[in-house]
Picture 1 (cartoon, rainbow, N blue to C red):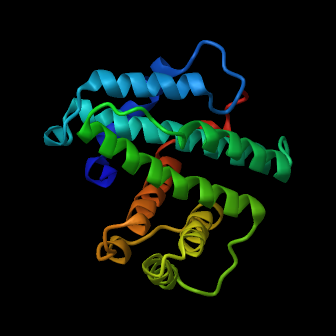
Picture 2 (cartoon, helix red, strand yellow):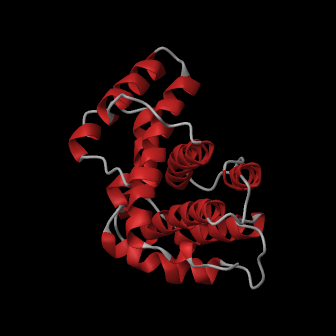
Length: 217
């Protein structure tokens, strides 16, 4: 669902919107207050699916980017040796606990978008954890991993499906892998499709923003 909104112009707006959301003092990589601020912004947007790429829809892209950049900041701190592997995983778990919790209903259209966003973030955080653990060495191609994930989802082997997608995301982080559109365009609707949207967002965030590498906070 978020994929239909993903445009370069929206990502260029993301940094200024993140700054308006950020609390004045914030020591954690991502806080409940920050997430609540985004939920409030979403509620105020009055978004409907008919809005599409209009201004009320950009909040979801910016909201997702904000979480992704927090995860990438954790990875940067791990790569610099500021965080141990265990600490980095713990910090990811903290972010996960904030952004994947239950959200009180707002409206049917907004609830659908938030559910899609959360599902996408599941893959982002799984990919980050897979990268930190170094658990992504696999002889299979991205196409093979996607096919395996789709098959696993069909067999209701959800953890296996997610692990295959996480390996792709970890390669994006570690090896600069970019997925061709042709690999994802025929994936059936479902969790794997949502997760792949999350990886697309992860890839776009790494290309479009590198302040997380320099942030001393």
